[in-house]
Image (tube, rainbow, N blue to C red; front, side):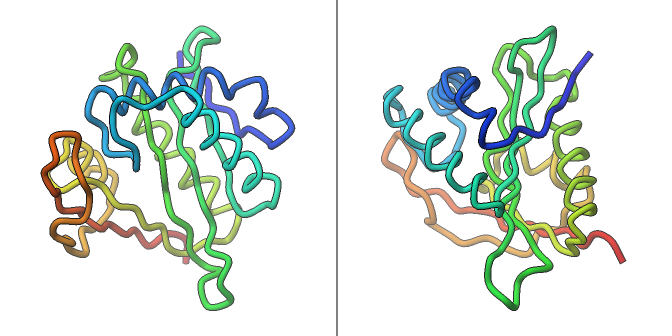
Length: 173
């Protein structure tokens, strides 16, 4: 059974090591998450420390998925801080441990973060992913609409430039 928890900034220190390992494992297996392999543990930990500060500021929310008490995945919801964007947020760093894939964890995390976004009275969720990535099927299955593709957006580990697909989903009323 998957247990999903919203993690506060004060809880983060207990999870930074596991979150760093998760990020490294996903990046090393080709996930496009803003990092290139080999990702150093210090770089991953620094990212999560910066995320902790953003959570503390109140504009970012982290949900973790656990199986039998072990970290299996995560997702971030980063609210827009601009006055004309207070109704929207971006979904970031949706990751599932390679050992826990194909168990519905990513969909469960998406459903959880969307429900949480509704409690914040958000109306629009946006996200991006590498063009052609398997995650596109997940987002489309969950009702996200592809707005378009930005070509040559991200550098890959092989040195190629990959496009990024931009998705959105209207939520709430």
